[in-house]
Amino acid sequence: SEDRLRRVRDRVRPFPDFPEPGVLFRDISPLLKDPVAFRTLIDLLEDHVRASFPKIDFIAGLDSRGFLIGPPLAQRLGVGFVPVRKKGKLPGPTESISYSLEYGKAELEIQSDAVEPGQKVVIVDDLLATGGTMCAACKLLQRLKAEILECLVIIELKSLKGAEKLNSIPFYSLLQYD
Ligand code: HPA
Image 1 (cartoon, rainbow, N blue to C red):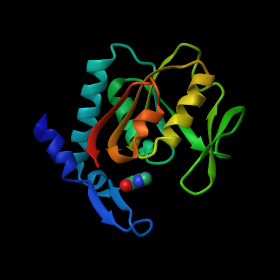
Image 2: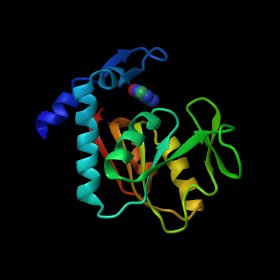
Image 3: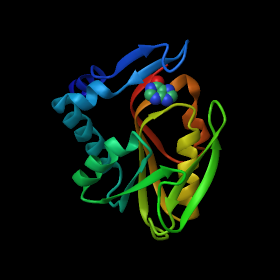
């Protein structure tokens, strides 16, 4: 499995000074572009979820790169996918939450009927930075009384301490960077 992890890590490309000077951006485009690496990524996530949780109802994915990882993982697990979207994209009754970004604020939404009370959900995204977006998504799912089994990402930016913001919610990352 160290081999599989290396195959994935080798397809994450660091981009200095994006989107602004001083930021080292971890770009997963090469990972998505390489079909063997992409399949290996989903293999690793599937193995992790199967080994950790005997029963799960849904994968919830975060707008927008969670939409690239969540649906193939959900298909492997034989469960459905529910999107957590930026404000104004979802029709019908929704729950909304505003959260702060590095610069300014944003809002996330989920459809009110996305999950039933007590359903077991794993939330996925590509990357955890400060954890603000993931934390907001957890609050939305908690409002629907979902049971959040875990927040799951490919990449954790350790120095930003985002996992601490998730309080007691279990968190797992495949790859860690400082
Ligand atoms: N890569 C991708 N998305 C991000 C990053 C990054 O390094 N930091 C915050 N969002």
